[in-house]
Image (cartoon, rainbow, N blue to C red; front, side, top):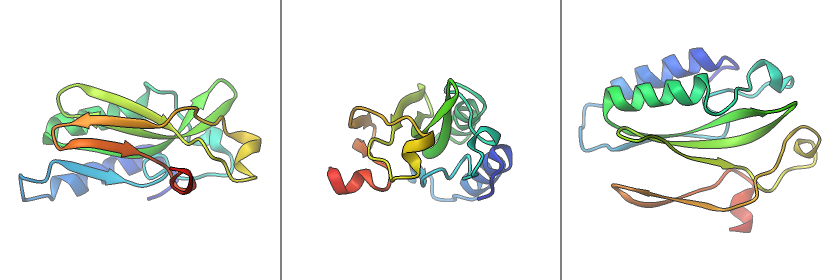
Length: 136
């Protein structure tokens, strides 16, 4: 994925469009997999709701699939490392923000403050990002 949220959304849609097995009900994209990672996060960060979450909602509805994808979320003048869960029926159902930051992230990122579990048709799905996994 590139540091270009729209190009990444286009790629996500192409990738999901190639799934031939209709029993596949969820596609998962990793940390910042939708937004990309850029030293100047303001170039790629987007509020939620915004173009990334709305793009994922459109793709989920069109392909009738759950999507879980990482993005950099703009919050005021700072950002959060966020993981969005999108239902093909309900749209955006969760926005998990990374809780445990590495040193450099602490300067620019706002940490989340709560663990998150999402009820899906597949069962309960716990959301976590990178370093958070160590503390779960």
